Image (tube, one colour):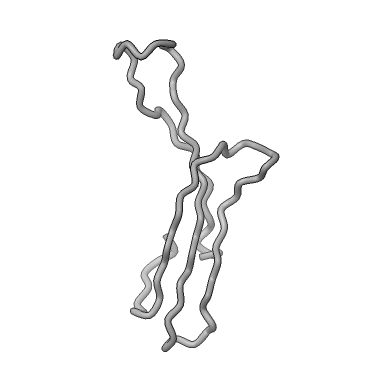
Length: 84
């Protein structure tokens, strides 16, 4: 996501939350939480959260198998490389 990390003491944990990405209240935004102190020898963890919304077709009210029921589009909110 943010590039190659050569330090073995650094971990990245990412969660993907599924919400509507266009809602105003409550606001669901991607975020990053950093526990690094700046010292390269101590271990630290970068925790990130992304937001995804799956969109489905509504051609068939009943699940008859005629129309595919998989998501046709995934909208996502991610953090920029500069933020990571």
